[in-house]
Every structure is written in structure tokens, then in C-alpha cells.
Amino acid sequence: ALNAKINDMAAQAALALLSCTSLVARHPPPLLHAPRYAPLVALTGSVAPEEAEAAVERAEALAAQALTAREEADRLAEAAETAAESAADRSDSAAEDIGGSQKFSLSMLASSSAAQAASLDAGAQLASAVEAAEAADELDKQAAEALEAAEEMLALYYDQEGGASS
Image (cartoon, rainbow, N blue to C red; front, side, top):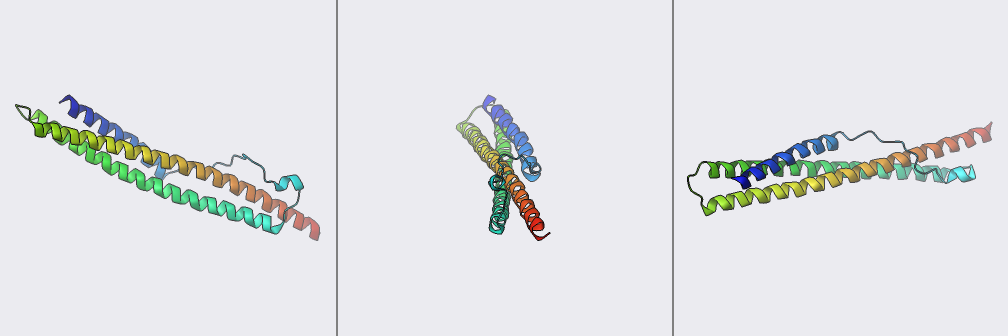
């Protein structure tokens, strides 16, 4: 009975954590514009059109990678949620088997062990989902920084082009 209660508590904890992770994965924080590095162009004071275009393409590529990573994190979170629900069901079933019986049998032990294994699997899947969400957050941050650098380069380019034609 103690093993079933432990499994049930683990499954409930996994579901609670998963609901938080799923919410974060489905509603990521806004991109942060933290200028971690200044564009190299700031050193020279001039921007070639190719440099500005390359900066925009880099920002777009990072944004696409971030989106793909966020979708993967969502997929993993959904799989972990399904595994946690399955683990909770198995744990409930094992607890009912143990609680409703007058004597202990090996099938009860097997049922309890299966519930425990399902809870461990759900926990591992949850850890993967959290790791993927953190990786997506990092890519979001890199994409934001690249976008900021590209915007600075474009502003410099258009300022120099506007100044040259005046």
C-alpha cells in the first residue's frame, strides 16, 4: 500500500510540474532584447549591404531554429503529460488492487512495480521536456540578440546611405 501511495504521489507531482511546463512551452516569454554583444560594424562605423543582409538572414535563421525548438518542447511536454496521466491511472489501479484485497499476491507486486516504472518514465519524459523548453528559451534569446544586431546594422546602413545621398 505504501508503494502504491508513493507511486500515486509521484504521478501527481509529475502532472503538477507538467502543467507548469506545458503552460510555459505553449506561452513562451517574450523575446528579450538584451544586448550581449555589439555588432562588429560599430567598430568601423560603416556597413556594407551584404553585412546588413547577412545579419538579417542570421536573425531569421535563429528565429526559425527557436520556433522548431519550441515546437519540439511542446511535443515532448504533451508526451510527458500523457505518460504522467498513464502513470497516475496505473498507480490508482495498483492502489485499488492492494486496498481491495484481503491477502497479498504477486500480481499486486507486479502491478505496483509497473506503476512505479511508469512514474519514473513520466519523470524522465518531463525532464526531457523541461530541457527542451530551456534550449528553446536560449534560442529565443539568441534570436532576439541577432535581431537587435541586425536592426542596428540596418539603421547604420540606412543612416550612411541617407547621409551619402544628401
